[in-house]
Structure formats: structure tokens, C-alpha cells
Amino acid sequence: MTITRDEVLPENRWNVEALFPDLQTWNSDFHSAIEQQSPPHWPSLAKLKGKLGESPATLKSTLEQMLAISRKLSTLYTWAHLRHDEDIADNDYKTAFSRITTAIHQFHQETSWFEPELLSLPQDKINEYLNAPLLEDYRHYLESILRVKEHTLSPQEESILARAGQALQTPNKAFSAINDADFKFGTVKDGAGEEHPLTHGTYMVYIRDKDAALRKNTFEAYHKTFNSYQNTIGELLSGQVQKNLFNARCRKYSGCLEAALTPHNIPVAVYQNLVDTVNRNLGSLHKYMKLKKRALHLDELHLYDLYVPLIENVDIKLSYDEAVRAVSESVSPLGGEYQKILTQGLNENRWVDRYENQNKRSGAYSSGCYDSMPYILMNYKDLLRDVFTLAHEAGHSMHSYYSRSNQPYHYSDYSIFVAEVASTFNEELLMQHLLKTLTDKESQIFLLNQKLEDIRATLFRQTMFAEFELLIHELAENYTPLTPALLTEEYQKLNKKYFGPDVAIDEIGMVEWARIPHFYYNFYVYQYATGISAALALADRVTEGGEQERQDYISFLKLGSSHYPIDSLRVAGVDMQAPQPIESAISKFDTLVDKLSTLI
Image (cartoon, rainbow, N blue to C red):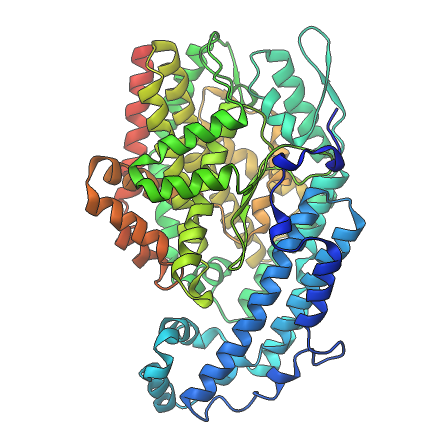
């Protein structure tokens, strides 16, 4: 039975107390971060409205005050959301999380005048500010605002959008609540008739089990739960799409995709290039599916068979401590400093909340803020997949560590476009390390299969998700209702296209669209695919190169948002505006399929 939060040992918890020792301290800081309880909550900022055109000094003072408040709120938010995710059903932390979320929306509302006022200044005044030595540290920050001038509304309109922001978070928050706290999946039977408790965490364990009956029963029971709520979740997903469409049209973008990519200076062509390039090379995935069907000796290969290892007598499992050692050893190409910081973070500094408990948020992520250590949520189950997940989130955390250590607050966060590069890079280093240390034929087959699954899940599957996400937004843009039947139908078409003729597409599994939390993240998933393409190229560049290549990569980690994402990756040594990185990743996948086929 899954343990309660109170039963989790201190050494297995993340060190959230380093931020605030308890709720009382958090409440005290929360009250001090808000200048007054009635609007305006920050009268010091309200007094600055209408004065941005006075001088560079006035603009700098305004920026410093806004960013100082934002920094305090970010720290408060980090503690509240971490505590909330430990136990989503805990009312005290749910209340704290709601309060800080509301406060942040209020802050955005009360500062919504800033960008419109800046953009309304005469061009000669803007040029003066951009070239002012006093504002040199903010030049890129200001240029990023000015670049989307045509999509920035009047102060009154921006205020309305800011006021609507909290209400528009409802689809995402409601999906998280029903998915992470309300759903109960019951139990499933294995081939011997024994019952097993089914949760988000155990789903990923059972779906990899060699017991075919357990895999099938797990897959069906899990998706039947989502299918039972397809109308509710369909409305939530539709609501999320309508939110994105509302914002895109208010800001005069041609569509939702452009609205999501433009603020990060990502050309729409990058997204379309990914989808087109993968579609042209689906034959490589089909070849792998055919090999997997033959290797598993199956008359029919189902979606619930895709994750099972190909070797029956090899099942690499590592405890958490063993996983930390493997991950730490694998990053040695990045140098002693990187390795030491990461090892200490995963061990004595307690960056990680390690194991599943009742009502804990499912999945895994890396979090934190400018004034905290990185934090990693895990639901560790000793599986090799969990080891790679730990490496993945550690990559995010080290990216955050270097960025926050080397950039001022306003450049300390990095774009989601580059976020998945650092994480997937570490997964590739781990794989290279394991292939060197586990050299027997069976382990090599097991690991090659694992690597192929990584690329399949991250490049091909996430591109399929990206194609689906683009499709449902385009349907909404053309006023087509997103009914559960339509969502399932379109999702089934994509599955058949991507997986090819050797995979049986089970109808119950086509409600998978209802369980993907990333569909609420506004065109996030494509970056997993571009990220793995860049990461594979950069990992080869670092491991096959010398000191300069390593320094190029570390320099990239330190940039934060001080450069546009495409330019940051060029510093590391890869150009994501070209199709070559994606084609190279697929070519590597194809080569690994052939190598695995030969070993089998």
C-alpha cells in the first residue's frame, strides 16, 4: 500500500525547509511581500505609472522595483507549489498555493501597464534607452519586449487580460486536480490472477512487466478510467485550447502556434520543419516496430507491448543510491565542478523528493527559483527508466543552477525551447556510460532497446503529440467543436500513421489524449523532439571533442535568457533552424535499429 506523506523518511524528502522552515514563516513573508491588502496591493509601483519617459534612471528604478517584488513572489510560489505537490489533498498547502497564485495574478495585473507604456514612447526615446550605459544590463530584456510591440495592447486592454489570467488557468488546474488527486484506478490482475494496486506510478512499472496479461489489464484499466471521464476532460482540453485562441486573437497573432512561439523568437518554420522531417522518416520507426514484433515473438504487437524489454533474463534495476552513482559518473565529460555540484545535490543537499506517497503529484519535474536550490520531484521505482528520468531532471536542475549562478534575476530563467536540451543531453551521457560498463550481449541488447525507446518516445511520440496539438488548435481556429469523438478519431489516425502496419491500435488506448498533462502547456511538447535532436548532436560533440567543446556547452548552460534560444544553442554548437540535427537523430535511430537487429 502506498505510504502517506507523514511516513516518508526525512532523507527521502526534498529540503523545502531551506526556503521556509514552516507555514507560519511562509505566511509572515507572504504578508510582508504585499504592501497593502486592498488594491492597489503595491502602491509604490502604481506611483511610477506614467513616468517611464522621464529618464533612463526612472526606467531602471522601475525595473528594479518590479523585479524585486517578482523575485519575492517567486520564492513564495516555489515553496507553496512544492508543498502542494507533496500532498495535493492537504488543505493548508492547497490554500497557500492558491493564495500565492492569486497574488502573482494580482501582481501581473498591477504591472500590466508597464509594457504598453514603454512601447508607447517615441522611437527616439526608445533608442536613447537602448543605448544608455545605465540600462546596459537590461538591453536584451528591453529588446525582447520591443520585438513584440505589434502584439502588445493598450494599458487598459493589458489590464483586462491580466485580470482574466487567473480564471483562464481553470482548465489546467482542474485537469491536475482530477488527474493527480481524484482518480482512483483500483487494482489489476496479473496472469496468475493476483491483484496489484494501480496508480500513475505503478502504471509505468506494470506496462514494462514481462507478464503480458498484467500489461494488457493495466493498459485497459488505466485508459478505461480516462474514457469514463472523456466528456469532462474533453471540455477541459477544449477550454485550454480556447484560452490559447483567446490570447492569440486578442494579441493579433495569425494563430495559436505563432502566439506561443513568437515571444521566444522561435520561427513557426522550426515547428513545421520538425513535423515534416519526422513524417518523411516514419519508415525508420516502422522498421523498429517490425523488429520489436519479431523479437518479442508476438503475432500482434500492441501499444502495451512497446515498453517491455526484449531480453527476458535481463532487467536492470538500480536503487536510488545506485542511480545517483551512475548519473554522477556519467557526467564526468562535463568536468569535476559539474560532477561535484550534481552529486552533492542528489545526496546530502536533498534536491530530490524521491518516492511516491499518497496524493503526491505524479510524474517528475525540476523546479526551484532564483533564491533556492534546484528541486526535483520523483516517484522512483528502481526501474532503469527511473534512472534516466533522474538524469533528465538533473540536467534541468544543473541548467538552472548554472543559469541562476551566472545571470541576474531578469535573465535567470531560460526558454522552454532550450530547457529540454540540457535534460536529454544528460540522458545521452548516461546511456553512453552504461553501454561502456555493461558489455555483455544481453545487457547491450537491453540498453540499445532502451535507447531506441528513448528516441521513439521523445522524438517520434512527442512529434506525434505536437502534430495532434497543432491540429486541435487549427480545428478550433476554424470553429470546429472539439468533441471527445473527434479528438479520439484524430488521435487514432495519427497513431496508425506513426506506428505503422505492425502495431495493433487498441481502441481503448485512443483516449490517451485525455491523460497528457502537457497538452495544457501551450505548445510545449515539440521541444522534447527538438531538444533530443540538439542533445544527441551536442553529446557527441562534447564526448568526441576536447576542452573547447566542453566549455562551449557549459557556457550555454550559463546563458539563461540573456540570448534568444536559437542563438544560445549556436553557442553550444548546434543550429536548430536547419533540418540536419533532426535528420541526424533519426539516422542515429536507424543505425541503432540495425545494430540491435544484428545482436538479436
